[in-house]
Length: 174
Length: 192
Image 1: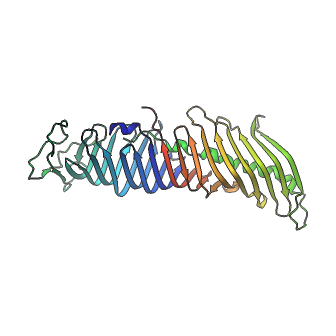
Image 2 (image 1 turned 90 degrees about the vertical axis):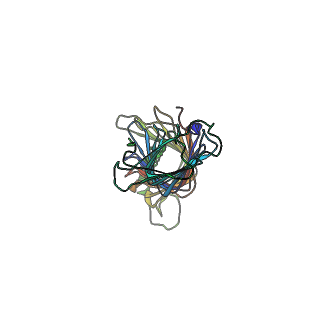
Image 3 (image 1 turned 90 degrees about the horizontal axis):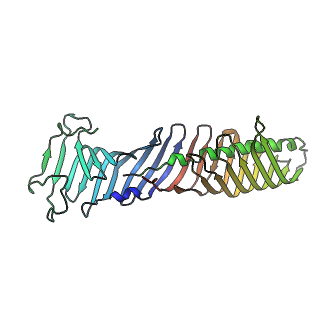
């Protein structure tokens, strides 16, 4: 939910290691980050800080899990990936390597899924655009309710056949 | 998504580094007394100072540290010293003032090990772009020569933007790192 961003952030971990010289903080072991309805779990989260003290997070896990309630629909969006990256400024969550994103509308997998948590939109692309063999697979399930709950990010698909997207022309994730 | 949270601005590195400075200074304070140690085996004090008050001045004559203790006792047999009701203030240049209070300070092995015990409260005052910070723990072992401060008892840290607890802490002042075991922290994202 959009209001998540104003909520308190809770982080728990077995070990925090802070390195003042490198301005890096590492949370190791059973890392759980929650903020409002958003919840991320990982084995390790590395937090880097730039000169303006903006934070860049890299979460590694087997897998990293992500879960957040959606404003637009009465459901949760869930994500999994070997690695997740996010930062303070943009509300974008990047899921890398066996990335999977699931909501009541369906599920999508790929090398790289970028999910904009405030606009609740996602882009799928190969980690390196055009790498051969990186397939994007999307299984779309039509809305059970009528489509009144606002235009959906994904177009409706025929219920029977899963839609398989080619990954080559996928929007390059900047 | 994740609001801004600033674990690094929180790290009590600078603050706990002062503890190391404190203990180095404490050593110097008690050394003169140690020189008079005689050989007897009983654990008798050879020096007792009531209302102990010491100030350390920088080259420019400004006060760097002040330390008060209700009592200081030195024992020559094991070259240890005990301070009661410790109150330490540090006025590092360009740094916010830091105050440390504790019920006792124990210097062991001629000051190579310093235990700061009993209701240890470290309080850093606010300064431009620096949040006030309070650290509470029951005891802290400081190894001045190695620049290490460590505790295995619970540590609680509080500042306006959040709070955290941990089941142990280790500060290494030489490589400027801090480790917190089983940390639970909560931050308020700054107003957007």
